[in-house]
Each structure stands twice: as C-alpha cells, then as structure tokens.
Length: 394
Image (cartoon, rainbow, N blue to C red):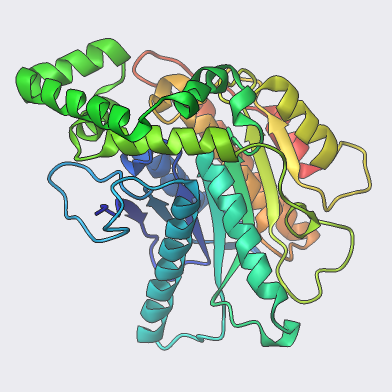
C-alpha cells in the first residue's frame, strides 16, 4: 500500500509546459511545498515572442512514503518496502498518468491532441537519478520504433538535477557512513524495529510533545517539522527510507548512461533529445567532490568549447546545502528557484529569435531584481548569482 502524495500548482489557462518534480529520500513532496510555490509564483515572468509562457508545476512523492490521515491507494500491495528500480517504475507510471490527465483535459476544450505535452523533469538528490533512468528507459522504447511512428503523448524537452546523486553515492561523506546498511544481518527485521520505535515514541509522547521533540532535535521550521512528524508516524515511512537508502548505496555507482542520454553531436533523427542541467552543491555530503568533478570533466560542456550539445553542469557558489528545500528562506531556495527559471528561459524553450532572447533576458533580470529586494524574516537579502546566468547563457 502506498499513498501517491502530490502537489499540483496549475497555471491560468492552457499551459505551454509542464514541470514534473521528483523528490529525494525521504520521498515526501511536502518537504518541497514552499520551494515549488516560489517557482510557480515566478514563472509568470517568462515570455517568448512577447507572450507569457505558462507552466503547470506538479510535484510527486516517491512510493510507500504515505502520511498519516491521508487517502491510500494501492501500489505494490504485497511489498511493504520497495527498492530503487521499483521507484523508477512508479515514477514512470505517475508521469504517464499525469500526461494522460493533461490530454484528457485538453480534449475537453477541443484542443489539438496531436500536439505533444511538453515536459520538463526536475529531480532532487536520488530523484535526479530516477529522472535520468526515466529518460533512458523512454529512449530505449523510442529506439524500437521507426522515427515516423513515435506514439509518445509527451515530449521531455529538458531535465534539471538539483544536488544530483547520479554516480558513486557510496563514496560521498554521508554515503560512506550509510554503506553499513548493506552489511546489517536481518536487515528487514532491523529496519522494522526502528520504524516501530519511531511510531511508539510518537504514541508515548503524544502529538504536541513529539512535535516539540522533533523540532528540537532537527532544528527544522514548522512546515518541515510537521512533514517529518507525519513521516515518522506513518505506517512504514522509516522502513521505506532506510530500504531505499541501502538500494541507493548498491545501485548508484558508475556512470551508466550513454550518448542517447548525455547527448552527441550527431542528429537526433526525429526524436526529441532533452537538454540537461545538473546543479551540484559546492559542499554536498551526499556527493563526493572527486566523483562530481570526474563527471563534469567527462560529460559536461566546458566554457569556450564548440560542443554546445553537451549538458550544462554547474557547482553552486552560494554555500546552499543539499537539503535546501527544508528551510527555503535561510538556505537560498529562492535563488535555486531562479536558477531553474533561468534554465527554462535560456535552454528549454525552443526556437528563440534574437529579439525573443532579448525579451527573455529582460524578464529574467526583472525577476532577479525582485529577488534582490526580497527579504526573509531575518532581513537576509538574496543576492544575484551572476555565475549561473553566465554559464547557462553560454
């Protein structure tokens, strides 16, 4: 049993693009609610050819992370916990269902159903790995078809990985600690006991004192504390998080994607080759510096290179942590929202003329000025990130 927890932030009117967001681990989309609201509130500043471009923002929890007091729907009913491969299948299924709902809605308004639904994937942490695998599996299915016979209802035009754990997670500072999960005897029994302990502690302390205890230990703001309390009290959230973490240590190792995903100078022969952006943390305890640098050296576009088709990979210079979504105001989540917005403006929206690029740059700068004036409760002012602008425009 698993609850399909989603956040749907629709735009006004028919959207031009659909952002489909996948969480990290623990896979609860509620951790990202404030961040996604920032994103949804500011994509109205995107213009193309003088017209506003509209976006639906949709966030999806991972499977088996359902919360207390919410409707539960069947998924992998016979498995109390599921691994990374099943999570990838789950996300594929949810993405396809989302696209079908969009097309059904378009049909109600007599829109042209031959037009594909344009999707931008965003994944945080292990969610980035999941998105990459969704792209790979989708490409494998496309290769089995004649280019003139593609029947995909959607076109994934881009992917953004935030603090992506896509290679060798076990070599990161936290990964080296988490690898002990792979060596625990009677692993399922142990994680079941840990989950039961969390639920018992919640029951003994009661909602008020358990919430106070969690906030004192974690230092989280109220919204993230509430999500964590739900997670710890859920029927099998703790077990699912630990089981998935063990799978991550075992499966996220070498770079397992080829030119079909990373790109190539060769023509795409009819299918849409998504543009890729990977945004790494400067000091990310789930990504080792040397594995990140190796991937950038091997796969990324280098400034001044003629290989414009290569993915853009950026390293954050603002000291924003891996868990940026937990405390958006203090950790710079608005800055990251701008980075994604800027990515959409300059890399994902097709067929810009020179005049349109000028219009886009102006809209982005207007949003940036708005960010500079935005202050949180502590009076902290978010500063512009010129490095992001410069490297994405390259």
